[in-house]
Image (cartoon, rainbow, N blue to C red; front, side):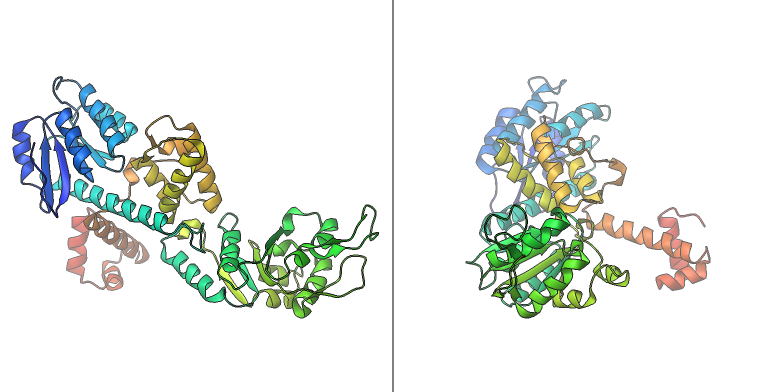
Length: 454
């Protein structure tokens, strides 16, 4: 077996056919290509080098006509180096075994005869995915005690939210967090508290939608002994309990109109009166509110006080739904996989290609909470080495896979732009060319390239 070179991307080719070895040895620029002719040689190299990408022919000696040796090698390699991306190379009539290999944890498969250019693209993409996963693991590992703990994100949209949190947190401004259910509004509220001068004091939360209207006032403001049947002792409310710290009022849109006046007075004067009491009690708290409802529409409908709205929304923060956070669904899925692996005592090696694709395409109406629940169930129920789309109970269509290859991405975008322009122009080619900023001959040339009929 060939020895590795330094400072090059490592690629292990497991192939017993010396002719194919010779063909592949010089095909991959920028890679240090190592060759292994059998399982023992392959395992020796993997233990020493932990290669990011591996191609594996399933037909290995001593039984090259069968796949048992190749599948055994696949499983053992992933035990040693679970982060390696293994591309299984199969014959044209061997799709079933390729699918079986994917189920055991292979990254992808490629059918013979070998086209070095296409296989090279698959290898390049596998290497990019390996490096991205490595960066994400380092990011999570190196920031375990961050004040933004729990906010796992890499998207531009959430980066802006984190920047806003950092700016707003040191102030006492009343902040309202808007976002759909499951987007992590309480996590943002806790981040605002943890980054503030009040971080060493209490963070007290109350969900207005979870408490009956008849009990909400006493929960918020407390009550005096004898204020009502069962009030056997004076009890401070949640606002008073949060004195010196942060008070988080979740689902503020569910506060009844009758109670909104009392809440407004507290926000304006920072004093409260317990139910059944007359004493004014000063309270020093930072107030953070959250809601998934459209408060402006509620104001128009007479369901929410306008003056209260402006009082609680000195600084608004909108958390985008997961479907708008490009790349975050996969990042979060891997975070939750690590989390539930530890909690459930499992050793699932990762997410299969079809799972990653399904996660990217799913709309996630329940947002991060839905994703978390899907991963928890999948970790518990998974019987393979990797979680699949089926384990996640998500739809998967391999014909709709999103390519990471820039050439593919550009061509897909170009083709969609042509289709949209021609549609908007009602098949008027001159108008479509103007919309695209190209000449008619160029338009016809591109239509021919992408097999778009006029």
